[in-house]
Structures are given as C-alpha cells and as structure tokens.
Length: 171
Image (cartoon, rainbow, N blue to C red):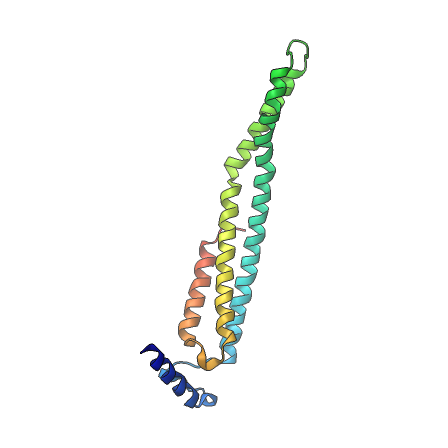
C-alpha cells in the first residue's frame, strides 16, 4: 500500500509544472532565498558545533592536567614517606606538607570546576549541532521536488537551532 502511494506521488511530482513554482498540496516552493537561509543556518550550526568540540577538548585536557597529579602524587609519595626515616631527614616534613597541599589544590580544581562534566556537555552539544548540519545538507542535496515542505522543514530547523543556542553551555 505504501509503495503504491509513493509511486503515485512521484508520478504527480513529475507531472507538476515545477518551473512555475507550483508544489503539490499548495505548499510554498523552495526558492534560492530559502536555500540561502538554510545554508546560513547550516554554517551557524557548523561554527557552533566546532566551537563546542574545541571547548570540550579544552575541558578534557584541563581535567587531565589537574586530575593526574591529584591521583599520582599520593600513589608515588606514600611509599617514599613510609621508607624514609623522618628523624634523619629534617626537610621531609616540609615535603610532606607541600605534596599534601599540591594534591589538595589539584583535587579542589577538579571538583570545583567540574571539567569532566563540562567536557561531556560540550561534546554532546557539538554532536547535536552536527546532526542539524547533516539534516540541512541532506535536505538540500535532494532535488527541490523531492524535498520536504519548505515551511515545515525551515520551522523545524530554526526551532532546533534556537533551542540549541539557548540551552548550550557557555563557550
């Protein structure tokens, strides 16, 4: 049943005088202006997606920068502290205090700024922007007579772009 409907629709589309701008069902035709608007939105989504991917990578590297010392310093320093005679090495108590201070600072930086969560959120929004770019490019790649109705598609694309822009994390 669906196949017959599709074939009849395609036959109707081929018989429509597209050069006059008449679209089936009385919908608005795709024009050069609407295609340019779609390309503008695609470029905006592409730029925003790239910016979020870059921010995600930055947050990930900050998480590694602060996280590795917070994890490795205690692991490396604990056996040394156990092996050294504290009475023989007068400066060792200062070294212990310094490593404790450094480890605490690194842990505070990780927990306060939540670089891991920020990284994940930026990567998620980068992917959502990329999905919108793909939707627009896929629609524009089709011949005009086989595209979705321009009003419905442009409204969905604009609503998606606006929602992403409103809810995306700060860059």
